[in-house]
Every structure is written in structure tokens, then in C-alpha cells.
Amino acid sequence: MSKKQSVLVTGGCGFIGSHIVDRLVADKSEVVILDNLSTGTIKNLNKSAIFYQGDVSDKILVNKIFSQHKFDYVIHQASKINTNVLEEDPFHDLSSSVISTIILSQNCITHKVKKLIFASSVAVYGRSKVLPVAEHGEINPIYSYGISKQTAESYLKYFSNYYDLNFQILRYANVYGPRQPIYGEVGVIAIYTDKMIKNEPLIIFGNGENLRDYIYISDVVNFTVQSIEFKNSSVYNVGSGSPASVNDVFSEFQKNSLSNLKPIYKSERFGEIGSFYCKIDQALKTGWKVEVSLKEGIKRTIGYFNKHNRAWNNFKMRY
Image (cartoon, rainbow, N blue to C red):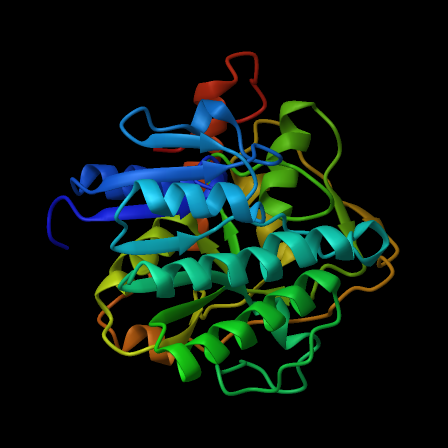
């Protein structure tokens, strides 16, 4: 990517967004962040970026930011993930994914931004009957979060068809790694790490055999930043392509623990999606590849939290 290109990153103080900002800054891009800090934190702020605290669904604020900067690209990461049907907030999903995407799209068209990159989710597929799921697979979200992502995708295609908006839709799988916050029931690796810090038991809901597609943060950042260079508007699954069960995840934590960890099994929660993993052939065709295995990713995640929590002595590090 050329130096000194200007990029707006919404949610740039959040888990994924902050890592993307760090990469862009390292690549000598000029970066502007818009984040309301509802799930992100000021501790993640890259001081080389220009920061606006506010909501991406605030049309007046977003219009003002676009009028003050000449953006080449927009990377829309602002969103709160929640796939627990009992804790979802549809109005928040509508605002953070749909309304925000419309506002950003209109500004990108008005200000002739080269491309809008949208962080979507594999949640748009719902309970897929065919695994692994390819990008052309059935779209049938079962959570409000997935419905909002699907709707935002539809608006991007609408703006592309009628106003020539160039977009990339990136359907992230289960992203994990350093800086991932704990909220709701999202992210078993982050939850397990948090439980270990607090010396609390690690719980497995159901029999632990449901499969998921876990992908480490650096691989997600690599693809997201690389997608800036893609010419045609496209949709990509961004996952590892290698499914793993919760029992597999627990086993990796067990290997890195000083204590004799034993899982605690509880009844499967209401609204569970079952097994899911995605097909990543389209992403691989771009030259991108998955570089961090689940084993290595969990080790790196443990190492990060071990470094940032000096009182945490539950883990032995195997390097």
C-alpha cells in the first residue's frame, strides 16, 4: 500500500479495530479513528492516529469528519458482537451496523472515497445445513446481530449498484487474541483466559463437540489491510478453515496450565447455533494465508494476558 494514504477506521479503539490501526500506522498511513468507546478502550488508542470520540451513527458528526479529512479508504469495524439471543439489543444492532453503514456509504460516495471495507460476520449464515459454508451459501441469520450485518451488506450492494460504491465485505469467523474484551457470551478463548485470571472454573456448555472456526487476530488484520488493494467489490469469509471444538480449545488451555484443569459441563444454552465453520477458498485465492494455528494463537493470547496481569500465576509458558 502506498504511503500517506488516509484511512478512517471506525471502532479503532476496539479489539480488531485497534490492531488494524496499529498495522496501518506501521505502514505509514494517515489514520483517523471514530469510536464511542462503548466496547473499545482509550488504552488501545494509537497515539499516531487522529481520534474522534463519538458514534458512527451520528450523521452530523460523521459528515463533519468527512468534510475535514480527505479519506482514501474507510474500514468500518464499529459494532458490538453478541450472539446470545437473551442478551441481544436489536435497536443497538440497527444503529451500529445498519444506520452507520448507510451514513458511511453516503459520505464515501459524496467525497469520492476509493473503497469502504465492512467488517461483517459469519453470523449472517445462521444454522447452516451445509458445512463448510462458502460465500454463496444460504444467508439465514438467527440472531439480531447477524440480521443487522446481513442488512448492512444489502445496503452496500445497493449503493454499489446505483452509486458505484466500491466495497469489500469481510465475514469474520471467531476472531480471538490480545485485547479481546469480555462481554456477553462471546469468545470462548477470551472467556477462558479471563476465568483463569480469576481462578474460576472453565465451563463447557453441552458436550463440547460443537465446531467453530477460530482465527487469530493477526491473520484477520493481514487480510483486512490486504483487501484495500482488491480491485473489484467482493465478499470474503475470513476464517481459519480448520474447525475446532470447545473441547479442543479447553485441551490447549489445559496444556498451558500449571494446575490440573478439569472441565465443568453444563446444559447447552438456549439459542445455540450448533457446529459452524466456513470455506475460505476465495480468501486464499488472493494470496493471503492463515499463519497462526489455534495452538500457537492460544499460547500467544495467554502470553499477552500473562504479561499484562502480573498477579496471574495459573499458567506455565511453553516457549
